Image (cartoon, rainbow, N blue to C red; front, top):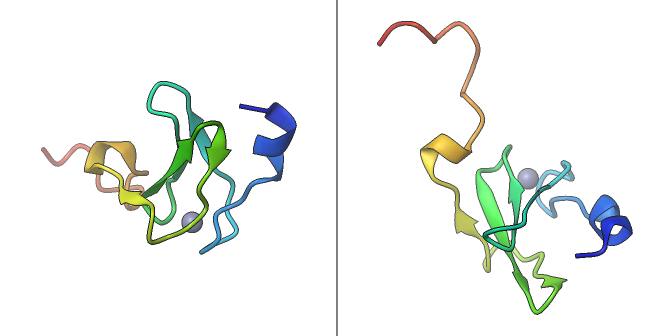
Length: 69
Ligand SMILES: [Zn+2]
């Protein structure tokens, strides 16, 4: 995956920066909780192609809720 290309990519929904998951070959938007697939080196930046991230892949909802478990 081209680093320069990756730096240009933003989430189509929130225009946020994406996190590249090399192992899964996905681009993660932690803000929307979506993972965009990379097919044959080409990121598929379509919300309808993305899968929802698992809960532990997302950012914590808000600070101040930790430590209650
Ligand atoms: Zn987003």
